[in-house]
Length: 113
Length: 113
Image (cartoon, rainbow over all chains, first blue to last red; front, side, top):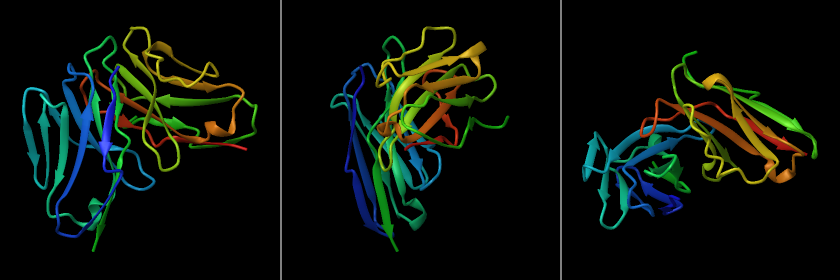
């Protein structure tokens, strides 16, 4: 089945700096890679996703890149703000029998004002 | 309803007791997930329901855990003979199908004394 690894587990940046979170996946048939943000005490919410037919997707200050050959994808946040502080989860969905979504272990991002 | 509803929001029980957690997904969503999130940890996959297909139970940690989804809508996660290590937030999420955005409920926080 699919296995998703995520690094780093914690990340501290100064406000205005960029943050990068990286994930690798095991199932070469995986075709959908979303990122979720979970603020303290709240439910996870989708912030951006990418499908295997594109290499990069951008939405304002956030972008995701996908390298299918290396089986890794990354989240990039530019011009970080204190409200970006949260736990970020990457995920991957395979094309196996049940196509379930498997999450990485999460990255706690702290943006220091 | 407008979103995924879970109940109870908090449950405190004694070791050895059985508990039932309920999830009411967004109307029309054919897929439903249960995840477990221990304090400060990631989203551990438990079980996945997709339409009328047999559920993917590969994430259930032991035979004390079971789940059902009646009529393709409401789902119940049952934990028998609870143990202290079962203490966690149990999150339910629904989606329109494979490769779609997951909408999470607020979660059920289970504390086993």
